[in-house]
Image (cartoon, rainbow, N blue to C red; front, top):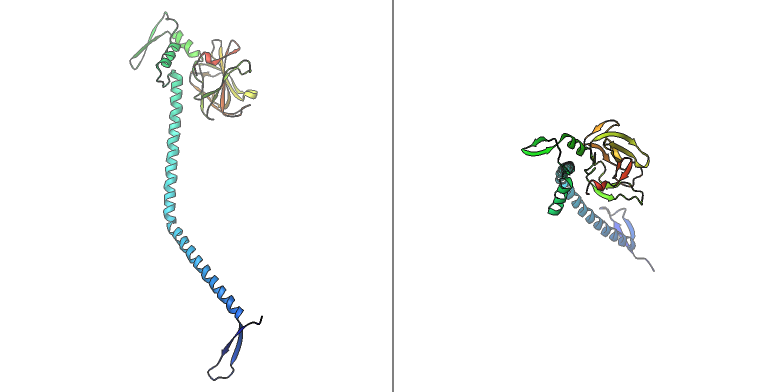
Amino acid sequence: MKRKYYTVQIIPEDSKGIKQYKISTVWFTTAKIALVVFIIVSAAFIFNLGKINKIVASYEKMRVMNAQLVKKDNNYEEMFSRLDSLWVLENRLQNILGTFVENDSAKINSIIDRNRFVHTPNEKINVDYDNIHSWESGDEKIRLDRIPSILPVAGLESKKFDEEEDHLGVDFSAAAGSPVFATGSGVVEFAGQMGELGNTVVVDHQNGYKSSYSHLKDIRVRKGRSVSKGGIIGTVGVTGNSSGAHLHYEIMKDGKRINPEIFTHY
């Protein structure tokens, strides 16, 4: 097919040196397409430039809002930390005092019956706290204080005492770093690494009973030191052969491991 051409002449004022150019119609078509593409690209650029300018204009507002959100997040973190501390303190106090929030009267009566004295002491001394009178002998107070009868940690029982499975203690699941309490007063017999049990503390209650606390993250007492009932002796961890944060708790009577649930209802 024969190409078509356009002739372009450039004529000076004196009509001398006339220049003549032949331009193919294909060139004009290409020029038209290029012009259309240029217009489309320019329109897209201007549109996006407008969006970019809008984002840049709102950047300062976004920065201020982000700073406010960070401040609120820090406040929430502080509030949650305080609530967590109050929860641990509440559980520790309930643990020490043997009191629990409970609406079931049958369960309340069961707790009262379980902690009632089984005999009346001969010698009595008056103990008055905030005008609430209670009578106990000095020997009876010491005897009760040495019995490992409170919960060792604020957590959930995850595995029971089972002689057939050779699990001679009770496991409590709790957050790593949660405080672990001595369940009775006594003297620290052992505080250190104990094979698969990891960091372990053994307390001799000096009445034939001993209690042990294993898989601790850290130990807060030393061998030979006296500990009080409810005192912090360490924190929950995953040391030794442990798949998750928990406390392995055991009670021994005259060298024989017994079920801790005999003393405390979990």
